[in-house]
Length: 343
Image (cartoon, rainbow, N blue to C red; front, side, top):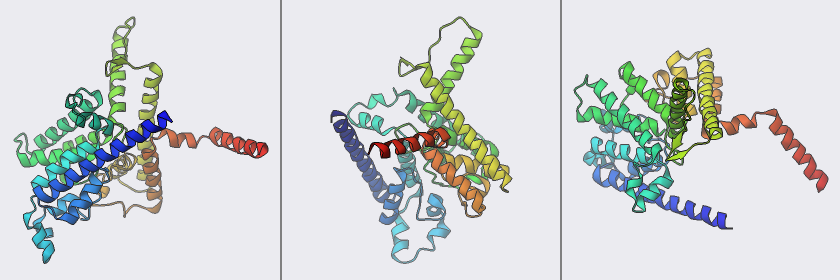
């Protein structure tokens, strides 16, 4: 009963936090950026949930296009007369990053302990990955002459992909190859554990990097006793092995689905980024499945493969692969037989 009460209390707090953040985003989109009320509600519901769906076929970029807005007539056109795309995009950046942050950590922060935010190892890794790639993309897009528009584009796409929201403010398929490579990196980083984001999760990637760093140190000094630490505590080796296994399974699944898609007729970039986007529950990939396109042109078999990838990625890989083991089904069958005998 005590455990049940704690779970219920935690769930209540997270729902309160989720609703408050959603209402704040709705107010900022509607009042501050001038986005019409209907569009503000739709985008709010798919930002904090990291869903990324938009009423517009061109995602957020469709609302910044004057030719698109010109197609609205009457009251709809008047509703968009106050719309400020730059303000709206910065609101999205902030709340996409919040959607990819651990909700229990956010509760601690809003409980008058804001200093805990940047003391959290996972959040620091998550935020620094976002900030580094956002600035690097802005640098590449402007040949080193960073301006506010390029920074906004880099920040928006980095936040969208690292949080697995999947919005698009521009067609990043048209970006230089180096910028697209950075976006692929941020797609793999993923959001924090305990957030709405998908992907391999920042904490796993962080600890795998620390594990690799430790092993390099051990190779240089074999007699040294070097522990892997997280939040000031030593991480036991069984947990490290488990994390390495999970990240390895993610990589193998990405690679396997990517190869299958290429064999089914997709080009290399489309196949592997479609795999990354679906297993990470991100949404858009690159080339034929880029932000201004969709998955409709893929073959039925390719869609079935990607459906499995989305399912496996959302269920954290190990659960799905465990269910595919024959021994699991044998145990379940024997338990069913035993229960019938005992009854």
